[in-house]
Image 1: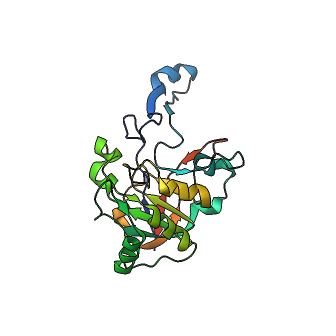
Image 2: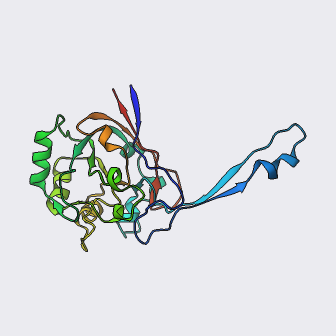
Image 3: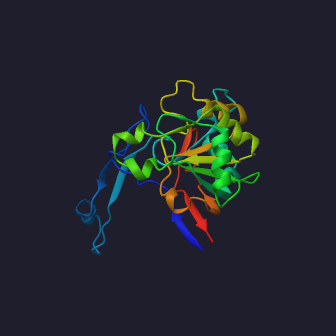
Length: 228
C-alpha cells in the first residue's frame, strides 16, 4: 500500500478563490515566551492561523451550494461521502477557460486504463496546480466541466468528485453549471487538490475527511489516495 498526499500546503500567500478570505498564519507562542512557565527546561511553541472554510484543499458542504435552510453544513454531512473507491481521469489537454463536454469525458475514459463505476469518487486532473501553484494564473488558467459534463457525473452515478483547480466550473463562466448541478443533485466536490499526476488513470481508495467545523459551508481537508 502507498499513501499519496493529494492536498495543497496551507500557507500565508497561497492562492484562494477570488473573494474568499486569504490565509493568514502567525507565531502565537514561542519557546522563548513559554520557557519561564516551567522549571524543568520544557517549553513549547504554537502557530495561529485564519482560513476560509472554502480556501485550501477542501470539500464543499451542501449549504455552500444550496440556499435552502435545510441544506446540510459540513459537520452534518455523511462521512461516507468523503471516503471510498476512486479513479482519476486526465483532462490536461483541454484549453483554459473552455468547457469540457460529456463527449470529451467519454473519450477520456475510453482512453484511460480505468473505468468509472457507480458509487465511485472521480477526480479530474487538470494539471492546474502542477503548472501554476503559487502563481496568479492558478486562479484563471484552467478548463471547467460544462453543462453536459456535469450531467455526465449524474448519469454515471458518481458519489463525489474533485479537481486540482479552484473550481470545477469554467472560470470564465457566469452561470456555473457544475455548481448548479451539485445544488440540484446534492453531489459535493473537492477543490484545490494537488499531485493528481501521481494517480492519474489509476484506481485507488480516496480518503478526504474534512474538519468538523460547526455551521461551516466547506471543510478544509487533508486528502490522501491509498494506492495498492
